Image (cartoon, rainbow, N blue to C red):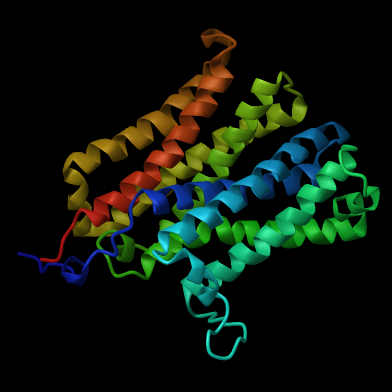
Length: 302
């Protein structure tokens, strides 16, 4: 009989729904910002509206994710202890700590996404300070802000998976692919959300269509990453032989396979194919985080 991995002897950190929503919303924030930057830098002039939507969603999502994380701390008023030393008042940054790195990434990304949000409002004529629009491409300053924000968004979208990997819990600490899985999932979920919002708003230009095709490719990549993740767990993957395995199968079927089928058979399935596929991807992205978090939380110390 093979030995039980050390991760089965550790206590659970008791992460529940607030953290699940934090992971999900934070991934959307980073993913939508990255896609908005790509639309701004490499898209056609008609894609500027798509980028506008991405920046707005990213800012709203990063504010919400920060609130969720702060509330989950137990003592919300002490959230600043994650950034500042309480005794000296100096900034507290530990580059070797995923939690410290993530806290600063959230703060900096929140600041940059706020600037992009203001620039978007100014560009649309909804803000009196029209000079703020220069914080958005194609100007040099706007490109700099967007590139920095895109890098921070990339970090925010994937660091939660890395954070789980250092907790020494079953599944979380038994694979090095959680960060990649969360990053790819954030990209597919964010692309689907932008497509869904665009469809609901009644506009579907070439940029949105390209985003739809991009999402289909990312979904195929996500399927490969999830297969590699399960394979990398080895014997620990037996946790998913329980009811959680059914949920994981649901993630694959609902959030990946069904949307891909709808993408391929779109002309036959009718005009609702696009919003249905996009909605399924968003639901699948949320369910993935539910399965990853709660399946490990359900394993008590042996």
